[in-house]
Image 1 (cartoon, rainbow, N blue to C red):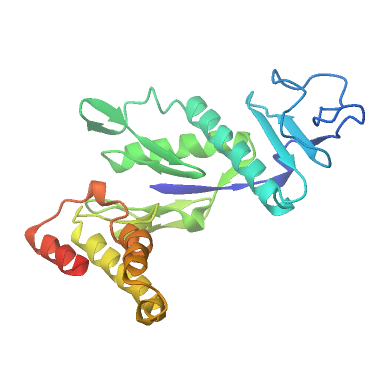
Image 2: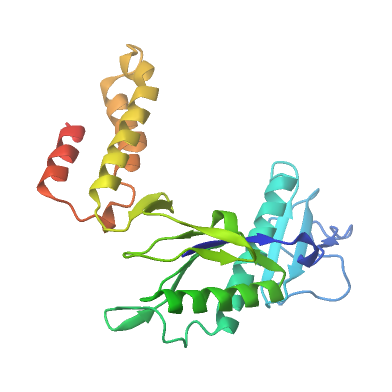
Length: 257
């Protein structure tokens, strides 16, 4: 089950604003009480900058230095919210007891029942009952810190038959494949679908760069560098996890040529 969370904005701790102390040219934090263990005088926080600092509820020190050319309000808020979400998820998983849970799958003798990236969480189990148990634990702990599961974005993929799930009156979508972190995951574990998809994406990039490749003002070495920098990375993204058959190998070689 791949779950995403929605953040309730009223749970975000308010930012405290720290103005540059007039007597200091290095952007000192002007509050009388130190907020963090970091030095209050921050090298590089130059004149005209504003320093934002906050101690989150999970003992994480977040520091942002803004000013002309240092970012936008959207970027600041996005970074801050992402940081709070990340530490909230670590807190949720710890309190949900997933590390001690017996549910999960065995890989190299190690029990693994969750994978986390930013606000995405993948729960894994060998049975439907175990998966439901893990999911409900995460749901309960998420709500305690003001996060709720986004049921509409949640996906369930099973290698066998599975019953329909409902959470809070909403049906959880069951799929045979989905895109996770840029790669296509399928129930049968066949990588040929992802390889074909990657080759198509690479051809699309080539088509978008067609005018550059046809231009006589761009030298051949530059065109080669463009292909290596902009096309090949798209094709081989996630290739470390591919199981390549002879047919796929020929397709990849043909694309490279």
